[in-house]
Image 1 (tube, rainbow, N blue to C red):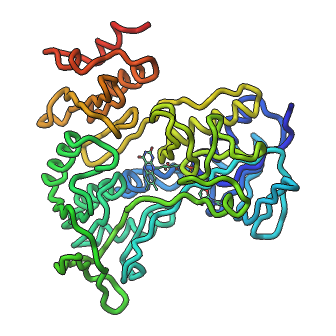
Image 2: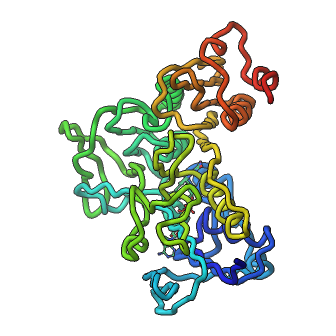
Image 3: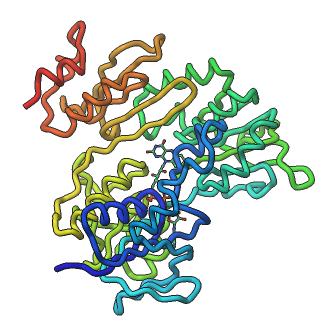
Length: 411
Ligand code: FAD
């Protein structure tokens, strides 16, 4: 069946990509891309890194200039989708305008998990999700003397590195016991901990914040659950995200830690797909368990998969997940999911900051984490996209080289 109209809700990484891929694949029907943020669709990763450091200008964040949308006949609608009328295949916008769809793609992303503690709305307390968040925060970082970061995940630590580089005293508080504990191995956490400490960042692990303290409406510190207070003129939090499911839920779509989709990224309504941060899909790299992945590569690959299906080339989604983070002079790339591994083998050295961790589950390679070793990352990507063969025993051989091994074992 040839489609004549696709409506996409959410003009972020995934929504933009599905529109662009549809046109690239020869789709000639109507494409309408609905986004509730101001301006052109833009990339988020630099917001907590190069953009926050002033190394990238706002104009360079847009995926494409305005002319691209005109030339490609992608109608960009700045509005909020309010209701999905599944029976009539219509989407109703906040402006009360209604759009008919033949196929609807939900790419609504996620919002920051709120702190939900007293003082969270004081002046000087920030999360980083949107360009306007970053624009409000960037000038404050330059002036800040004492910065408290709540949450020791990717975004919290990226920001901690930026604030330390700009001369602030930075303290990071986290309930967990090591950096990026949900996403990386203890070995790699150790390298990041040591490096951040060398930049002057101080960590408070296994601790929670009870309240943010203010004076005249402005933040002056945080109080930890143990009663200790830390002075702060700037507080930034990054304690995870919550998928934007309200629209889908109200329309009766199946929800499971996000919008539940099948291996083809279809919801329980055959006219509606969901992709990106909001989609919870059966992940072949996680033993088929329904999984939600928050990353640019995942958003882009899922967008391409849905676009291909809508153009008549359906295939189950099986892209190997990968991630990256930049903190100071550390570039960490992760391929695979490093959860549920039982054995690790390390390559390189922490001292040189060129260090990789191979993660195995039952002798099968499940993830490669590489810091400043892009060759290992590329080799890991290739190895994880085909049946597993590398064993921990081989990886422990003296002089083992992942790139050479991958090359020698190409099928
Ligand atoms: P988003 O890009 O968040 O887009 C969703 C869009 O939908 C938003 O604009 C939202 O406002 C809009 N929307 C929601 N509901 C509606 C509605 N009802 N109507 C209209 N519009 C709606 N990933 C990496 O891989 N590497 C990184 O280094 C990295 N760094 C990051 C740094 C920061 C500061 C942030 C915030 C994220 C970072 N990420 C990174 C994560 C990455 O940006 C996301 O995984 C990716 O943007 C997900 O794409 P998405 O399209 O699913 O969601």
